Image (tube, rainbow over all chains, first blue to last red; front, side):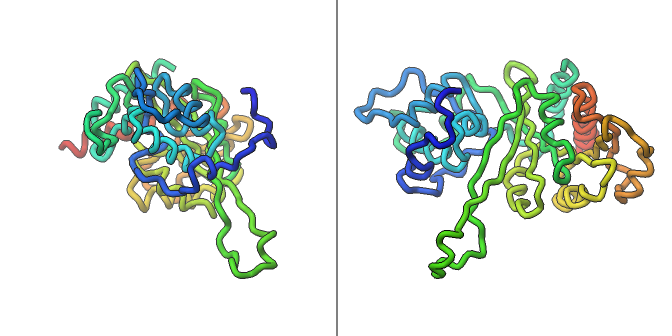
Length: 117
Length: 199
């Protein structure tokens, strides 16, 4: 969408994260689902513009990889911002379904869903 | 505030769907993004991770201007299976030098599809090897050039020295039904494995 002029970004991705390059929470996988808290906590600190973009995108649940693609930012950068938002209570997070032990009901559900394609 | 130590799991959101993923792997240019796109409900999305190339001597001032960041691109798509379950399909980076990323990608995946180019099947050897070594269930899907399949499945199985328990299918990654059937074959394999494990 608009503003995607490749030369138009005025800040390099890592300046968005205060110079930090390591996520503080490894729990954000590519398919962890993020949802903006509703209502937003009434704190003094106003979210940064990039944080606000994330909050707008995840007004409905959205996976981390999808957020990164739509923000046109690396996943590693988005995860750092998500950590900030999580700590500020501005988002809720749902980890992916564990698949270590195969769940026949889950598999059946996927199969039925694919069958409807 | 329900406690300062916010834990990801404790804050799990009841309204968000469960998510699972399947990897679409194979050699460079074998049609991974094509397959993702043919079944995805959204146009495939792309994420790019910057990687500083290793092997640069930081103290070498002559090298400063040469220092370059490369990116590893990953294309993915989405299939909403039901109200509360979403399947993501991730195309793995095709170039072998980026394979270290595969470990992260493979973690938590239901299984994988290894796409094979019928004209150069050996370009997918390494992908097959990757999943075999890690015990990640996979099916092999032979993507016909222009949808044509000059070789029978058994010839390809033999060329790739695949054990009998690995399903091999012929497909056309451009076709939605064909790609869907490959995914269903993978799920059927997983269901069979789950049943066998349950005794």
